[in-house]
Image (tube, rainbow, N blue to C red; front, side, top):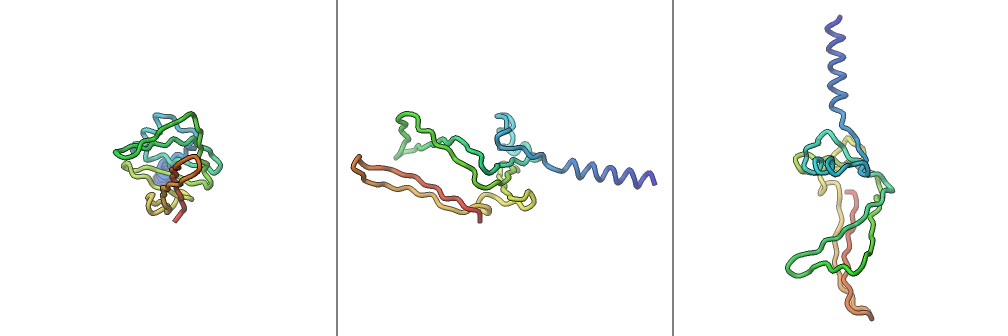
Length: 134
């Protein structure tokens, strides 16, 4: 009887230990974030909560184009739908329910766009991103 009880307790402890820690995106420290993105914290699931607003930084560099900043234009991204992320061996996986996980290209679909417009103030360059759940 003691053996069955011990096996039951050990099994429960193993199942509980395997349950990942859920951390909100806003609660990540710089060190935790770095370890997470390198796949070193496979027991951590990051919650990206709906309504969270994140500052947006834009980088544009290369042989043909570079980003020229003229003053502070604060842009922000708002998370519209809660989802979860985990990182295994530097590969990101996404989920809505923390049960079914998919890589970025299997979870999201969308398009990137770039366009030029000529206005009365001169040429205008625009960049767009449309992202949906598959």
